[in-house]
Length: 276
Image (cartoon, rainbow, N blue to C red; front, side, top):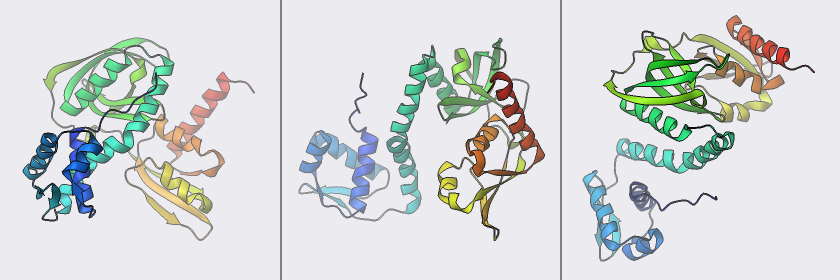
């Protein structure tokens, strides 16, 4: 069944009206009624909500006016909400189609409840089949973050009685439940140990580096020898090793040795299972 986009949610409609006013557009209620397929009462409620949020938006003789330019801090807050929905919606749907094709049972409720636990900081319990041997175990965790990596959805969480974040693939979860028990924000020492990572790329791949980067903080340096050095701090895990391998011969791993070892282990495991 083809996916049909729903009507624009009211919070996004309100943000769009504000952005268009800031952009200098001449807006009137009649045109907005037709464009968004909503009533005059709904639009007046939108303007009232924007005023409640501190934006000077009014209607006068059907014209919609912004009488005062808002500060950047408030605009940043609502822009974050808008961009997450508008830009990520299609991407998320496409990636969920891959999950749908793989026919993972219970994925809808597992993903929904994991997201709820992360957002509300609630303890999560689930039954999980380990990747290496398929053995199922029950875990109680403090969820930290839910991320999408290629077509995999991963919960980063700290197991009960431990302090290090671990990766749990949602596709390996069998059952899940959110407990009423909450927890405080996890302290920084609960994350995996980070190493100083240094890799090199050909200068011709500068644009690719920016489009495929996966680190929140990093430094790029142009070297006179004709290559680009990327340095960052990150834990050494399968995710980082896989990212390096995706570059094939376009990357040179300078260090640390632990990252080279992790990559070699993954490559050796692949060739043991696949004969060429």
